[in-house]
Length: 213
Image: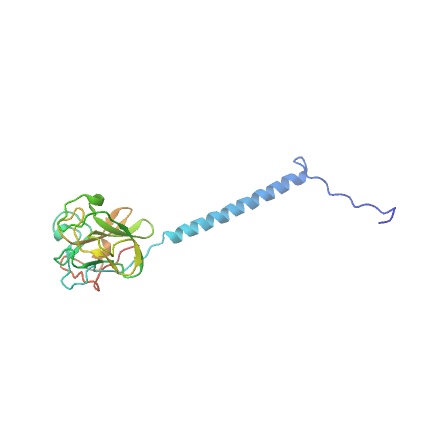
């Protein structure tokens, strides 16, 4: 630079009192709001995906052609309110109690009850040894009262052995109790829409319902 050349002026300092400060502050605030809205949208989208529900096919839990449905909306189809399926084949601790969902799902196991063939206990709130398959929007599918064996435990599987047909918990005899709940309330549409009733086959290849998960 020559001795007489003009120097380039330094940019003015931006202070809270400067006109530029307000513009920059407003621009920064708009950017932060945009980022927050974007993150909120991503969270809502993820929540929507996590709570989506579908209808699954459920088959009988016992691979014995003698297995039958004994109770549906009412105990023995004529007693007090039940809103679930009870299925048995007249045996205890002989046949496998199998997962009923006709696709690979995670079965969470709640055990700790002594094996029993006569029931009448309050173990696990009367459910006995049981499994829960959890879906979205408060839905789940439960299988109750099994006797435990080496197959029992939380697992991901497709119609696998979960234990033995038993009578743990508040049960009046060896059977498989299955229900579909939303936020803890038993629903009946999962089996009524396919026509399952007392006397229907509970064989392990026969569809007994379409639970929501």
